[in-house]
Length: 182
Image 1 (cartoon, rainbow, N blue to C red):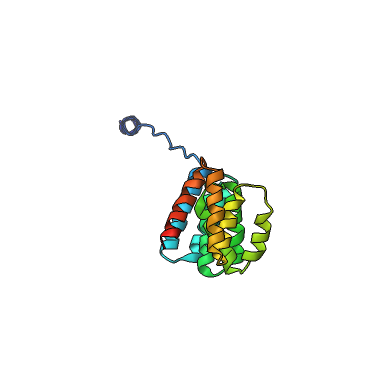
Image 2: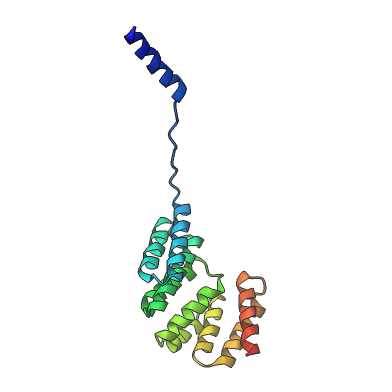
C-alpha cells in the first residue's frame, strides 16, 4: 500500500507540474552593439570615460563596418577629444566618415580635431586637390577653423549649390545660417 501511495504521489507530481520548455536565447550582435553604445553614452554623461570607451569599443567589435558603427566610432572619438587625445579621436572620426559620409557632425568633429592638433593648413592642402565633392565640406570647415571665415563660407556655399539634394547639404545650410547670424 505504501508503495502504491508513493507511486500515485509521484505520478500526480508529474501530471500537475507539467513540462516546461526552456527559453531559447538568440544572440544578435547588432542589438547587443546598440545596447553597448547606449551604455557608453550613459557612461559618458556620468563622466565615466574609461567605461564609455570600453563600451564603444565593444559596440564597434560586435558590429564593424556598418553605418551604425560610424555612430560608435564618432562617439568614441568624442570621448577621446574630451580626454585630450586628439590623435586617437582623429582615427575614430575618419573611420566614421569613411563608413557614413553624410552626417555633418562627423565633419565638424574631425575639423575640430585637426584644429586641436594644429593640422588645419596641412589638411587644407590635402582637401583642396581632392575631386570628391564631399571633401568641400571638410575644406570649408577647415578654412573656418583656421580663421579664414569668408573663404570657408564661400566653399560651403559652393558645396550647397553643387549638391543640393544630399542629406548632408541640409546640415551645411543650417550651419551656414547659424554662422552668418553671429
